[in-house]
Length: 459
Ligand code: UDX
Image: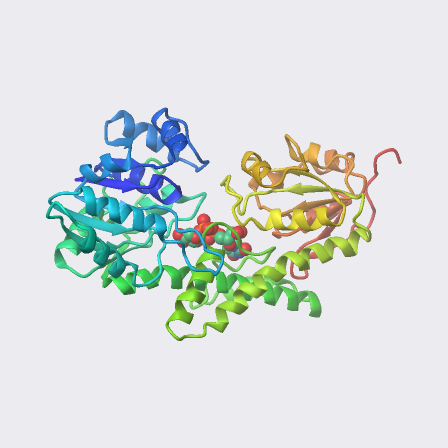
């Protein structure tokens, strides 16, 4: 089928590439001219495992094209709107880009279009969209509006799109629901050449959930807010573990063995970040407020999450006493591993707090330094974890990149001023770190001190 995708961010680019991968003829547009020219020249505007290879392959096979919004509107029978809905100062989602696309479709499209909102939008946006198309529609446009929220995670977006747990479709017409069923059939039946796994590996068929538009829109905000709540819950339990001398790793494990709870999203740490959870929790609080519901539970989820930053900084302060003039290594800047995204990254908030107290930061991240240095300038960006640790009073692990688990501890011990690791993601093996003479502080009671301290620079 000829499909259009408007907006080439994480969701748009993955959607366009993967729909082409499963056999559709896709046209993807991007209004940011610099980004569009990069895409047209085969340069990736973001780091996402597998995505570059998929795009290259489907472009070569002529199933994916990049161009302007106008071209995209003219191209596909169905148009996926994947533009950004960033937070406004009051927490509402900014829908101006969605409105802009709706107006362009209303003005330019002829014949029939299925207009699909894939960006994260507040409930009842579909109704607004439909009204806008009818008010501004010229050229006798016939259309349906549908909601098709996306649940992909950064760092695993291609895998999540091609092997989802569920595909949610909100449509108020049978025609729209049938069209979306047809579009997603290859994925529902897992009948496509997978760019990640050999086809012999049978993957679970996703559930295709067709419901009404409002419910589909709410499923997205509710799902993200629930996951954020789970993280804030385990972070509070981690605080309790520290207070009573229990081990959060054991507690989370014990909880997660109950299938009603499940082990996922029970990793304590410095809090959730990224371009989804923080803004979606805020937007959901606002949506509820406007509907007369005081979602105080989510306000607490947000307050707990904000509190992770200060709690972590206080831990550093407790260990280093005066922060002014201290040299601190930061391992990890991205809001999570396998992405170069630093939007609302807890690591950046922690760095700003430490800098405000006069600490000198030496940072390393495998992918996110280019984007981080646009956010924070006066820190030393280092080409590897060892350079970042040179002469420091403490090493802070803020993003759980795999490579930090494979550090050469004796090499590191020879570099640091003080063998102190504060692990904000409980990533490292406490036993291994301590066995190499480091003092290890984790989250939620996972701390230990070496029996014999490591040899230091010049001693
Ligand atoms: C999220 C949702 O998972 C995804 O379904 C939705 O489509 C978009 O938003 P993403 O923002 O990519 O995806 O990241 P995710 O993997 O969910 O992590 C979000 C944040 O929570 C990260 O900062 C991560 O470090 C943190 N997190 C996650 C925890 O602190 N503990 C956990 O157990 C899991």
